Image 1 (cartoon, helix red, strand yellow):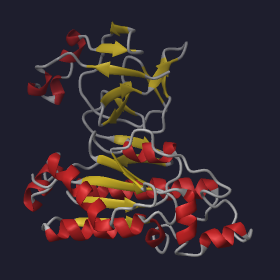
Image 2 (tube, one colour):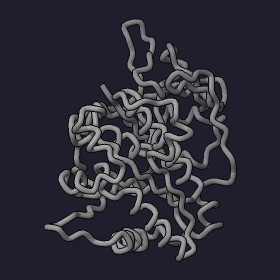
Image 3 (spheres, rainbow, N blue to C red):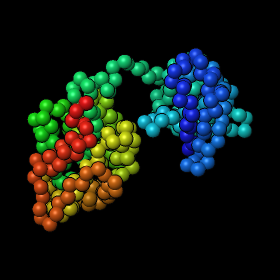
Length: 306
């Protein structure tokens, strides 16, 4: 069960962490669903984060932080002990303000903040960082489109970086196969790297098949709302197979490649992507024209200035 917390304390930002005891009187609103909420007291004198295995209710409470805000990531058992229910759960506790956390298999890690952040970097280079995620079948033209987009933005003096699926497998992801688990890890790693580029203020262009919605949605969840721009290059399978620029469809049809997307492995089309570039009745826009469509999208939403 997922619950989240809203702190109804507009004056809290003016308080120091050593005065967190004021939260006890503030009565934060705890919501268990969109319709079930109640006020709950929090009892601790200061704010911090601690790796949460099991902590006493009267000393700490588990919270999970994302771009959507703070949320509970634990529940209480009969003994009154909170236990983490996610892999990225931390705790507000009574040992000062420090951030010792657990993330996946990494334990006892501390996030170090720096006064120079995303906004400062964006102001320096006069653009806003984001991720443009181009998805589609093999042979649909993702890499060609990514290069055209990068060239168009470069001509406007905007900084970009392309994360191409095959290129990444030459280095960072060279240890990964094309088995389902490794393909999911491939997408996860690229999503994390893309997030770092966006945080640097760079317009990151990721071009890879990324066939499953859950993997693409997981990458979207890494970024602030609006900063993940999913582009579906909607080219029919028969057109992609006729192009077959790498000869992979031919190998798949001959049984020499197993689990090839579109042939014997599924491709899940995006349901709510930001941009659809569609092949219509034998008419396909040029890569430069499609790139201009994407550049107009970025310009209209303020990504080409800071």
